[in-house]
Figure 1 (cartoon, rainbow, N blue to C red):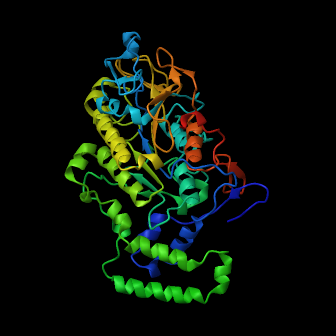
Figure 2 (figure 1 turned 90 degrees about the horizontal axis):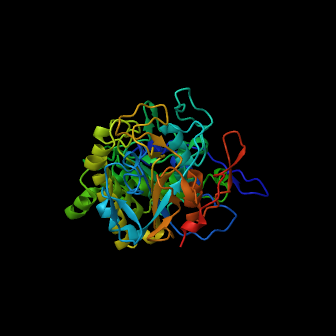
Length: 476
């Protein structure tokens, strides 16, 4: 760690967590995993903020879901704007949602509906650039002529979950940040905005790119068959003895004792806590059915289990590429909007999200867990128009970053309210416009982290976590 007097600045680097965990014994893990764990035990901002939340679940709906057709219906708008769906009442007087979300309507008293998400696109009309902004709080600086970004770079700004996992490491043998069941992706640009960037690969998320609705393989968290538990214990004790005589090495890592981090690495491999968190077979069948026996539903259920086990940040990405085929579950509804939403997207989202909110609330987890549901933008209010250069069918909607909806719950957020409002056609906010960077700042703030904290990038230049203020009006 490097500290600069007069302001809170941090820097670190490391190697890939997945590469480190793939080894089945500590002698194969070497010094890098304990060093990686040591790097995660850093202090937070000097500015004292009372934390409202202890952990975060980010539900990211890749592709840009239509706000008008899900949670901001406009029943009095012209037909070419309001679309095919009716509005239905919710458990909260005065708040309506689309008929596509009947289960969510019954738990609306647990959430805040942000109907004023908004930003003006500057090279951000395409998915990858907009996703990068949502994950990092920063607009990208390099956009190709097609509007897509360059591939991920070690100079990228870190995903907020990487910062959070570094500053607030779990107290036990668990992963700080888990991403599943697939990476952020648009066409061949994969993982942009989903990594630790200039923080170093030691702070990348643990990536479970598997379908939780099927058998999940966890070779990373299992010992190699040729390394018995007793043999691994012997190696651990040997390494402890060696490290005990390396006083200079201990000085080199300041006040941190390497033995502590060997113990954490050892526990992560052997404790079984992480493996158990990923094991949905331990859930009752009726609970799995409640979430929905599909990739998205089981990912949400696994997110709850990971939070229970101590993971600090879990991100569930909608299990389809950002510009995929809407008939096979992508939210990018240029070619067809109403059929896919009615028959595919919304039934899955409605069931899984309402189950997660109910389940978390019943278990007392929602009070200390911030749940955030958003996409990278919304969809165009008028049907069949082109707003981003894409071709749209008569019943398709194009990209629309000027106004869209996000849902937040738990973690000190108000319950059963609407934050901000959109105009009569859901084209623009009429009050309390909220930029994605401000939502990122709010997430940091909810955890007691100062969004203005400065970190050093790969060129040792100070950069704030995010150049935006948190939306304090969201908190109860």
